[in-house]
Figure 1 (cartoon, rainbow, N blue to C red):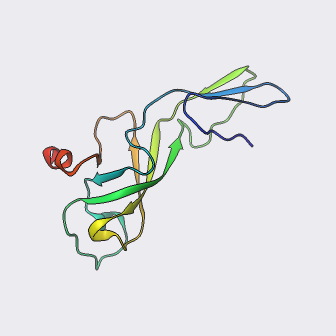
Figure 2 (cartoon, helix red, strand yellow):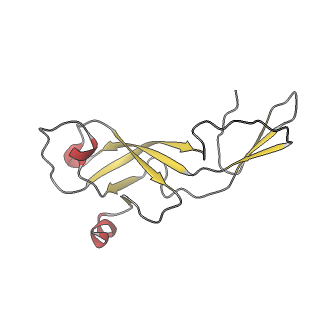
Figure 3 (tube, rainbow, N blue to C red):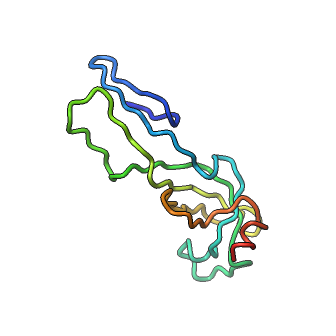
Amino acid sequence: MIALSQVGAFFKLTDHKMKLSLEPGELPFKVGDRIFVNQPYSTMVNQEVLTDNKPYFEADIVRIFLEFPNTVSIISERKEVHHFAVTVITYDLKPVGFYQNESRVTVRIDLSTKESLLFATEDKLLKEQ
């Protein structure tokens, strides 16, 4: 099993010396960051009885899932180094504040687009609305 633990690191199989490299990149937020999501909480969960406090909500990032260009990256060529680039990330979010007792939700972000649902502060979010 190969664990991809950090961006920019090299990983290798010890017996056959094949290297895997993850293209360096930047993610907008880290695990543990508190962010604002520019979408009503009720649209992200299947709870029709839920009333939204605001048209956005605040949450903490619990986990980040990295997605590569293909759903499954297949190595089919014999090469010394195989390069991978993260193209989409999924944030696992735990709502705080008004929704703190509600279910966690996920938000997928395509790193190639400039549009974002996530903001570092409420002020930045309100300026975008």
